[in-house]
Length: 293
Image 1 (cartoon, rainbow, N blue to C red):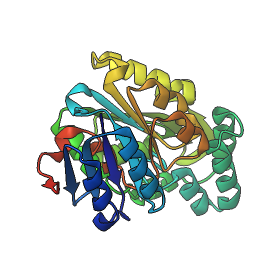
Image 2: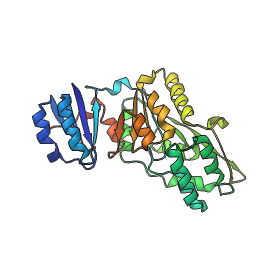
Image 3: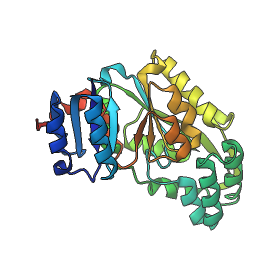
């Protein structure tokens, strides 16, 4: 037996309750804040029927081990751009600097994994050469957190889970974003600034190698080791090709509104719901839920 999570803003109880009753699960819970149903202890055939219904209704369907517990999680790591936040910040900076279309093309190619991330990032940052460094501040002030981000972080903090941004984006933007959410820290690349202007160069964490897919996985390994946690006690969340290794390494890897490479790598995929759907995967999130069946 397994649990089934149905979640997303388009979820309507009337679309699923008859199928839920026919399945005779242990119980059916509803979480109104996240717009989610959790069907507990459901057989595989009934889960197949509900999943088919969900696909036609733009509702995410996740199959979960029964009683999946946040007590077994020590650390969550999230990509920043188009994952924790809705923005692609380098595209936002490019729009201010006047090179938006070319930047957007390169960003799209990077996320789809069409050429090596580090090489692509160097080319993108080069487009910003000579721009006022203040564009990074402007971009950080204009970030929009993805739906459910605050609720997810509150849930993780309440259960003493370390909360990190691991991103190929820039620390100049990630640090303020993490501070707003009360996160543990960030591991990111950094824009090089001289005399108040961007030099068109980028360096990795602590001035080292650019953080690419391999680097993000290694960062997850280092952080989990520092927390005295096993990789099976971690969550990783991302959307692009640069997140694939991190997603595969984590105990629970989530693809969030992801491009093809990340979606194929992840066992758990969120295509319609917000980030709080991740919290809804864990049994502790449902302590105050409505019992429908």
